Length: 220
Image (cartoon, rainbow, N blue to C red):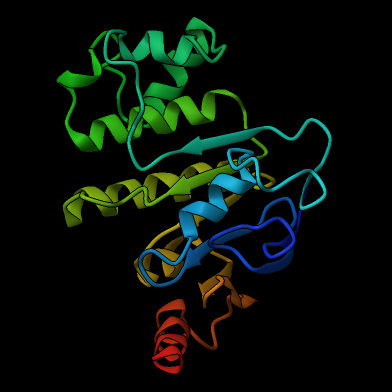
């Protein structure tokens, strides 16, 4: 599905170093690391938004469909929720189904500014899902949400992934508990330049919280 062969020095990248890793269908990856280390930069590279990382460094399978939930919802403020989803090609029936899935069945005609932050984030998630992604990229999806709304969105994302077991996910987060709830694989990014210091499946033997705390102590 996706292969990274990033050589940051070769392309003069100011943040990323050497990163070699593969992502297969159905993998749920949470990407942890210190604030400002380059997690969003790596996610943007995977999405094709960083021109310094060419096709030799970011190899995607043919016709790979990417959905990206940014930190900001990026809904067009002058268009309704329904119109925002229609712009990525969703039919009327698909929009109704997706909005029902994310708990926004009654908000289809609302403008983004009329939604709470949690609702806007769910609407943006529905838009990301409307393209039927093979790989779902999530950048700090729970940031700035109160604990109840964050837990609600985590449950929703988990249910959506369970319903589509071949869809892969890479989720940038600052909270290892998110990985405990969502991930079956953990990445930990650290160093200058930033490289993956940890890339292992998650098992019952150790939680993401325990692993990330050990790595954080080692990097101090």
